[in-house]
Length: 220
Image (cartoon, rainbow, N blue to C red; front, side, top):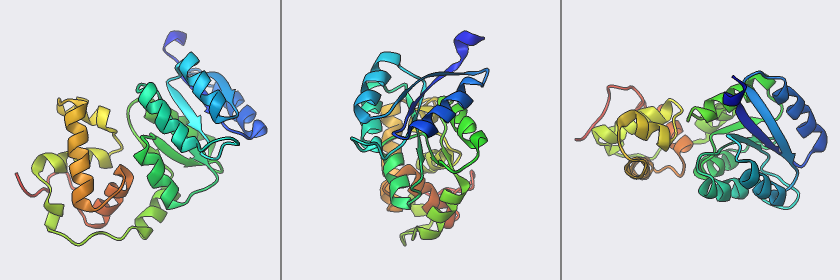
């Protein structure tokens, strides 16, 4: 049904790219393209006016840091999901995006299908990262030496496994039947024990240390 279409806003300073992406989004039967913002100021206004389900955000806006804008708007509009689309694939930028609550990080040079999948995944509470970016992050992340299983409790490990499957704290909380506040506490504990600064980095560290087997945990 049209009323159930996922609404999508594009925030990008490059007019041609944004217009082409808008045309592609508008051609999808289950998506509804609601507009385009070229600056951070326009993004703040349109997100608050239109309340889109998903925002495709360029971090390099003419007047602002797109990731900072996304973080600000996530606090104001917690039900809106943000997917970062960028030509800059540096691992540090990925970490900043995930720490800011982004639900995806994709290269602008990637296939359109990846963007469409990321929109659906973000709307469903999951996270999408381009495979080449994730591989680069895995190569660049140096795991912190510590107790086996990172000293994680059974519940913390359960949260880690769900993080590894691409779920964000809200989706994890629903899956486990706990409050979002409690879930964020577990996520914070996992990050601290693994020496990570973001959920994505925690998953990268856990992958290299072999901690993402669903039945493997340590602690109580």
